Image (cartoon, rainbow, N blue to C red; front, side, top):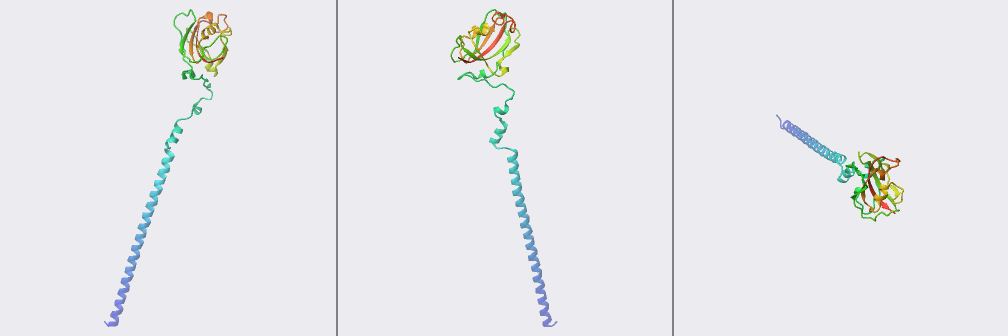
Length: 213
């Protein structure tokens, strides 16, 4: 082989080697780019997943303030629209006066007016001739069956005491009782409605004195 031919063959081999090297470099570059793209995609996916998780937690689990607001409705929200309003209690009165009492039947034969203090008020004493504001429950003494109640009407009753305008049991039993008191009046038939204009027989009332003037 001539020297000229040998030189051409050597150049051809070098060009081939350079082309192979360029191809390998291009393939390596593509692989690096592909890996970089894949890693970037994984990173983006991770960020998106994190964002979705955070949003989901905020949507499903409210903050303590939000949870408290949802779990504890205000009294206005819970109140029955048809329920009677709570009575206005005198200053310093026992909160129990804000709830209707449970009144049971009496025991034995009732022969005289009996006044039993259930809650002792701290206000002034009721004087004869004053008008009182009172909540009350009335039941038949012997059976405990309720026949009347200001609680069911949703407002207390205002009436004069000690002036012959109400039944004798109230006139005599409530004079001297302090405002803010809850008392039980056990009233024999002759001091209730002896003329038949009301419930017959002995009666039991539980009366809350809310005001007197």
